[in-house]
Amino acid sequence: MRETLLTGAVVLILVISGLVSGSWTNRWEKSQALEEAVASLQHMPRQLGDWRGEERETDDRQFARAGVDGYKAMTYVDPFDRSSVSTLLLVGRPGPVSVHTPDV
Image 1: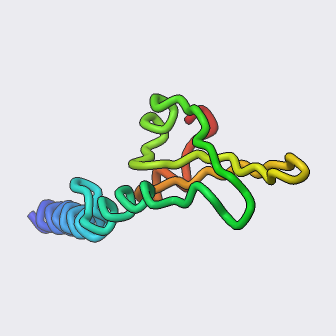
Image 2 (image 1 turned 30 degrees about the horizontal axis):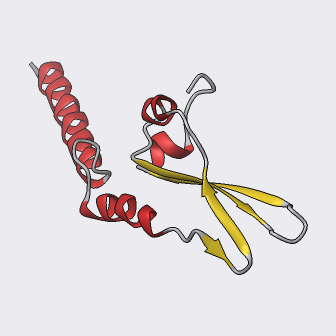
């Protein structure tokens, strides 16, 4: 009887801690801040000083597989010497975006 109560208490603690953790990390729903961050990608400037930016083509499936909620890929070119810089901004929950297996 005592072992059954102890096992039940341990299971209950694990379930509650999992629910609390999932709630704090927005595991089951998107937060308002995340949606606002995705929308703000549309305001990324096309010009930085003399540098002119162009959107890069990307494969949407790769970003969806990686758990990315939003992204913006740009290449900025200096009109004087034609040097370029590529940027990629990612928006998403920290787990899928920053920590994932090499196959993703």
